[in-house]
Length: 524
Ligand code: SF4
Image (cartoon, rainbow, N blue to C red; front, side, top):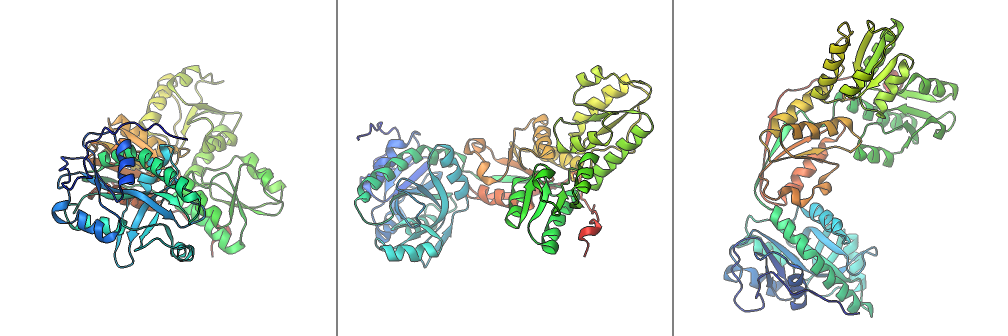
């Protein structure tokens, strides 16, 4: 079946002996004429250029060395076809190189995950992985050996092209390699596989342009403090120790902390996350998450004879104790928080007959306590400080004799991270918040940045970064919610460094030294 391919819009004449001198934007290095033409048909930006470099390492190296290389471009991408080395790659799949190597020289390309994710968002099948450059087409037995060394695809030019370009006029500029799998062996499928690969190269071309548009030197302003709080560290350590001491499986009711990375890491080590206790076998060990549980859950666990280890954060337990105390003294407790959050459900369960959830100023107006002179309020620990302040002020106005918690329930880690993100947001063009969507404190950090006037995005990791967010952005504020691991922050910085030189500066608004002891069940 033939395919209608639009005429190229990008300027090019790279098949001529004299390469075009680009003024800015993307330079694509494509070894073969077919590959170069496929890419050209996909390009959309007038500033984009395609340079055909010829087949094989020696020709490629010569073509991009010295005067043959266009001097002015923003970023370069090697685009061409490749042989797939693993069984799970099909013709047309794209491999974005995390590194290219010819055995003698290896060049790391740190933005590969980010680019591969953008290609996937464009509907293409793309993976990031290592690409090896070989002197001739590899046979089936060699493919297996290369795959065993961790390579995803083999080509005949990428390592030579990237290393020669970076040593010449491409020095200091961002580089990437996108290879489309044309075959995974010799046979009749090679021809149709080649067409699939060329189609993928064409469709990948505008994504490469988006990548080039996001490339520039940047400053990353790190908010301090960020990432794990003492309650999260304690909860994770409790599960780790339970696994060490009791062996897998260890059941955990709800996510131990609201972070997909943490949960998946613990799952791989033998933790089994369940929504409710009826999913836990009799006699098994169950850990209650950092967000706490209601007394009803505790009592079900006791009735079932489960071995319980409580990872509820001590600051959440403090709110629970206050709810019980106020209820005992005959107060109606207005709990400021978000409906459905596990912590809120646990606190509501402490004194269900006396506690009312108030989420907004309107909820305050609708409150009808049995005795307006006996109202107290408590707060979810992970609320935004100013958001909670609005509702508590409305409560105070309506119930002037209202009792308050001993100290603000919003915890030190939430308060500190919000102050820190604000400090970077006022200086940044964009704020990235590492954290999962169900992490209340991480969502609040996004809102805090936006209230400071800076667009912000919540991301689980670098692959969630959309290239369009970064276009024209020279200062990125970066933080992580209290449940997000510190290594995610490192991963994001590494990914950004694949788009241009990154200067990292930290803005520390306060330092933290809080630590919580472990429950006796897991103390050594
Ligand atoms: S954010 Fe605060 S309340 Fe929540 S687990 Fe961390 S220290 Fe505890």
